[in-house]
View 1 (tube, rainbow, N blue to C red):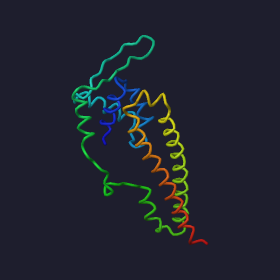
View 2: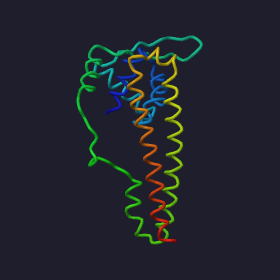
View 3: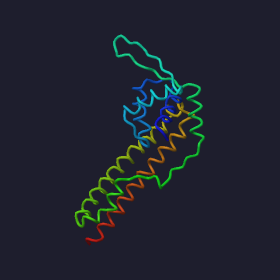
View 4: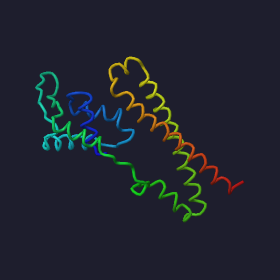
Length: 188
């Protein structure tokens, strides 16, 4: 996925949106599987407008700062459809994990490496439980009647992505717990 396709998807599903609204909605939904800063979002919006995938209208406001509202174009919708229809499965060879790299070389530090790795794994477990709580909350939200009516065409797909987050959180917790147990075997 690229950031531009995520933004195209938001504008397509939600209708015309300001950059502020896109940034906010992105950080409430897509952040669970794609990281982007506010500056990256605005940079992509400008590039997509130059590409003809979005148009914008400046709205003059008297009591508030002016705003720019983005709308997807026919070309933008075609690009979104093209991207969705392209099969791209994740490649494990493209995986980058600073955490796993640190753990891989922790043996170079002797006992200090073991202690540092235990700290890292405990933090992974804490983050896993936090993600599990968030994903459980999101799943409950997606099951609410009023939400399912408004987004009937999208809800199953959102549930699939939430299920991925839930599964990842459980896997992270299990991995951290098993890894901690493995490191603690040496001290028993």
